[in-house]
Length: 218
Image 1 (cartoon, rainbow, N blue to C red):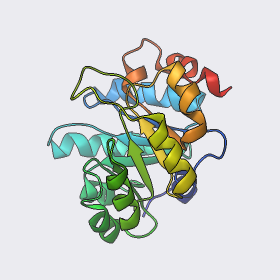
Image 2 (tube, one colour):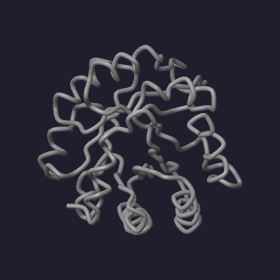
Image 3 (cartoon, one colour):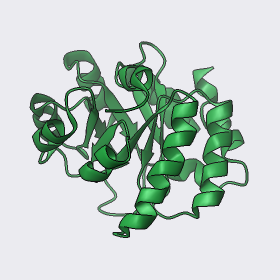
Image 4 (cartoon, helix red, strand yellow):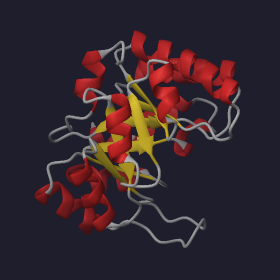
């Protein structure tokens, strides 16, 4: 399906001892500005995958973002997935889809996009939802938030869940939400990917901020 099979294969294999970087776009952005920011970050920090998480229902706007970010990502051998919009993923030649509602639509996404596409699922803090998504065929499961926030119920994913998952389950795991330098250091041994978005995009220099955040990885 995607133009970049190498990116697709590599983005879901896990990272051994060193987690890979999975970038998440802001929910709202000016395409020209964000395209430049993303290109600069990808040029400076090795990245496995980018998630287009643009909010709203403007199909034309989201479609233009798909095309622009796909070109930037694929020129750098980086996979691009879109949040929830299965048909747009297929129409715009993206590498797959990230489902924010857990396992509910994993089988549908796999049927629509085919076996080579990336299908990921966000499972919040629920081990059960993660296992269900994995059994349904998800290529990765994302847990979060891992950092304390005043948003929602304020509850976080504990290190013990990630450690159990990494030891017992073969499906790669992404941890995301409220990451800090301290959490990067603490969680590095028990995750395959760090999902990073809001932590860097508001900074004057997102690439520099990302490098500082990833300092514990060496």
